[in-house]
Length: 369
Image 1 (spheres, rainbow, N blue to C red):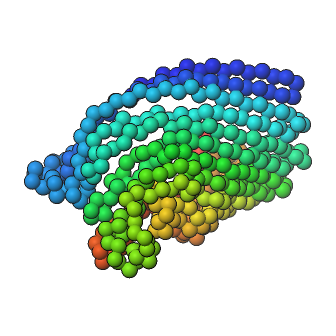
Image 2 (image 1 turned 30 degrees about the vertical axis):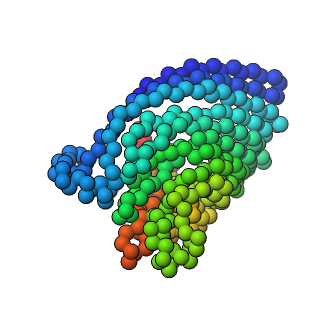
């Protein structure tokens, strides 16, 4: 793949108003050759011996149909940007910015589970942001607030096609459009020379404006093939269509509320030593963690609070330090990624999950020279 970019940046200053603008032209050429087969591994992370030809169809039925193709594509985009800021006071500034973003398309070809892989078009975004940055009371209090909005067209998202045995095979496709908008707050308060409080809070409204013809979740796939099962008849009394429409539904990993609150304390000790400690809580409301699982309750992370902490003992000149670090002290189960699959009729659904690390502690030694 090769990338070429041409950028122009123009700026100007008028008393308390600062103007900045820029633009860039990007060209992206991609060539992709893909060949897959099923076999047995000869190494932990590489090397494989193909299965005999008569077993390849059986493996494909379980893991998905084979695909082999060579494709290429070229994309280009003009990406203008601009920013204006106004200095209210020496310690407070208003600003507004605009930027256009671009992600090149992906060469595609062949089929996935017998379904032709559609072309993956370039993704474009128009991003707007306005806010205020300020410091108060001799820089002891920091208050920042901004509102933002990003409008995506042809957003590149990952969805899954399930084999008859419930194994997901992933593919990247384009959602028609989506919108991400919200408010962010940042605050820091130095109560005194030893004690500091800080907080970051985000309100987010992120959803697909248009996203028709989405592949089914694992449960939907199962219930489409088994409509008489009691659970399926209750959840989908009208049956399950071949595809779903997620227009108006939230995007993945987009909690309505999220942020963190922390407190830090430090104190000087005799003989030029210093003790410090910090505890913080990261919080999040519920969110979906799979594109094609927006309607699937199996693919939703509930709201949570995760506590982290740190104890430090160091020299006053910060030449060396010893830290005891604790993560996820309440041992919350937090899903980082996942998808839903279906297995045997006796088991309606199964999950493939990646979770964040459970409660853990680390001892760290730092030395600066």
